[in-house]
Length: 106
Length: 120
Image (cartoon, rainbow over all chains, first blue to last red):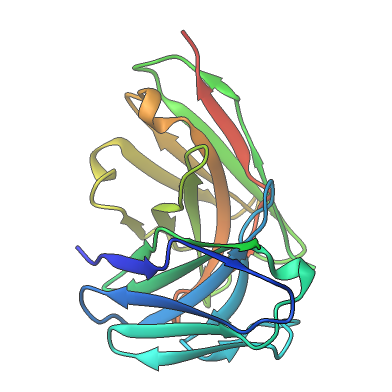
């Protein structure tokens, strides 16, 4: 079983700040994705294959990493970016989600 | 624009079977490039993958739920379904259907989600 650990659990930040979220896997998989979820909404795909932005995602969002260590960076927080972020690893025909990181307004 | 819509009872009794259907519009469920899957989220908690089905009928299940989950697909009606047996309070959640890429596994389209609660 692959376990994804996201850190930190919560980040309290102000608009305009730079954000770095971490996702660590207990073992490597095929592909790592990042999603954003706002209250009452379905998750939205931000990044696929570790570093490729999904359609319509602003370029302030970027992903990096490989093997078992991955990072989502938001270069400058906009008011609409306050949300919960999940990483998801695909491998061996299994899909695993991290527990999420909440980015809240300071 | 692809759209997915979950439907089914919002209340299920303990020990009974939860049944949901996801109707897909704006695209074919018979695409060779995608799986069709279910993901759930208990209130206030994170996302849990339940399982996926391919248009030809092959299935992939979360090992922790495998014994209770059955997925099926109806390509003629462009929809797929979830059955979860022997439900308990721990199965109370928002259930999402989603499209997942065969290459890379990204979930790029999601339904709005439907809350399923266990009744007394």
